[in-house]
Amino acid sequence: MPIGGPYELLIGGRWVPGAAGTYPVRNPATEEVVGEAPEASVDQAAEAAEAAAGAFPAWAATEPGERAALLHAAAGALRTLAPNLVPLVIAETGCTATVGRTMQVPQAAVRLERYADGALEPTVIPLPPQEMPHTALAPGGLIGAIARRVPVGVVACITPYNFPIVNMAGKIGPALAMGNTVVIRPAPQDPLAVIELVRILDAVGFPPGVVNVVTGSGPETGAALVEDPHVDMVSFTGSTAVGRRIGEVAGRTMKRRLLELGGKGAALVLDDADVRRAVAMIASTWTFHSGQICTAPTRAIVHRSRYDEVVETLATTAGTLTIGDPLAPDTVVGPLISAAQRDRVLGHIRAGLAEGATLVHGGDEAAVPDRGFYVAPTLLADCRPDATVVQEEIFGPVIVALPFDDEDEGVALVNGTPYGLYDYVFSGDTARAMRISRRLRTGNVGINTVQRNHETPFGGMRQSGVGRDGGSFGLHAYSELQSVVWPG
Ligand code: NAD
Image (cartoon, rainbow, N blue to C red; front, side, top):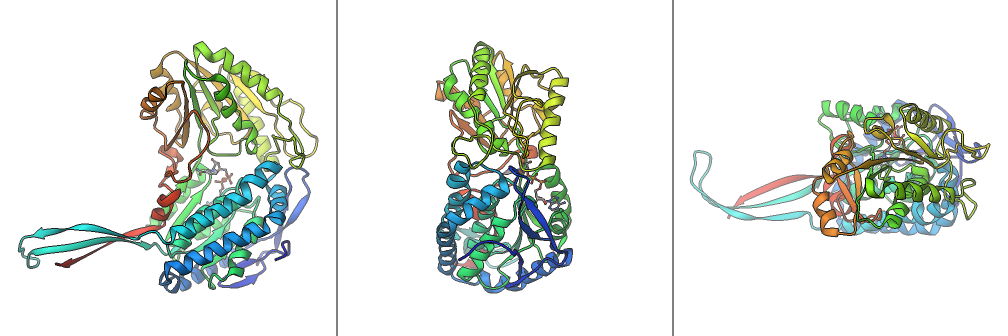
């Protein structure tokens, strides 16, 4: 299957141009146009939601094996197309070749495969029969019961830039496996690989209306889906500010909501930690997609006895990182997604310095390539806990370091932002780290690693979101529980 433009929208099984024309998608490393994405109208978003609602009853009634086979076929086609798709994803996201080759495309296929298998997981939960007395309502006796998982209906899947097809596969995989239909709305910055993914889903035989895609340069079509009466659930990944708005609007029509929002991950480095290991993990904030990842350990909260050592080792590490062309094999720090995001991150660095932080490495004046939206790996030390740079998500290659004296203070610092998505504890004593992890008000804790286990429930506490996906929890997120009882 060839890839490339012209790119169109899929609505009710028909490929159509965007009613409002197209808009350019830019390569963050070269600033050149990668391709033209369709500019959908608000009416087209409504048509897509209506088509998804029309397709829902028949799709929900399909055998799980049929849904599994289609998802497996899509994953297989995605793997076959990977050599063509990897360059496209690198071009539109600016991720490095390693991240593009090992994470962006294969990880999307892994997610589709996981949820193809997931379609076959049991949806009926047997419950113990209950002995009921005669009541004014009905005769007594043994009353049997089950709870069953049923699809929610039409799911609007709205995603951020950074890992476009991985994020989207993590939504449509479980949603389709459970028998929902979907309207996909990728981020404006990197929608082209997502359209390629939808082409694959269409080509392998998902019925018309089961998968629909609308793209656009602004938020309008996403906002229209959140209001649309045909949409039963909004699955959103993105910033806390937009998630809050979506939560309010979707609540009015009682839509189900899965909100995966921003984070301000902390790495709590205890006095008995292996500093080299901790630093290697914390440095992923610089090296993994230039810090454009919600789970990054962006705050190094370090016991005072190890603080200087950690700051120095981080600074030395930062000095070894090659920044530049994402396609060059030795590049580990690529560009940020856009000029707007670069300027936002630079603004945070300046604000941090104005609020008293010490610039240890990088900064707003560090040398970066002339072309492209680059920010140098930056380390700000001695930050005040209430400084904006410590409190707000930056979503760029910026690490802030703060010392602490005792465990209670360290835990308070970790919990001291409005977010609660992913925090990390580094200690030579796993039992101690486990005990501390219980005190962290966060959805996910990594002990001595930033590696993930995709079977765990993933999601945020507090301002980092509502609900969980990941593994079988992802299947649960895209279903409603229905109880059935009968006389024994
Ligand atoms: P964003 O919130 O600006 O946009 C996300 C998506 O929402 C985009 O597709 C956008 O067009 C759309 N949108 C904007 N306004 C909308 C509205 N009113 N109604 C409906 N849709 C609307 O986020 P971004 O800048 O693309 O991505 C960065 C953010 O995503 C960061 O905050 C990051 O932490 C978060 N993120 C979270 C996770 C997670 O799993 N928790 C994963 C990746 C990224």
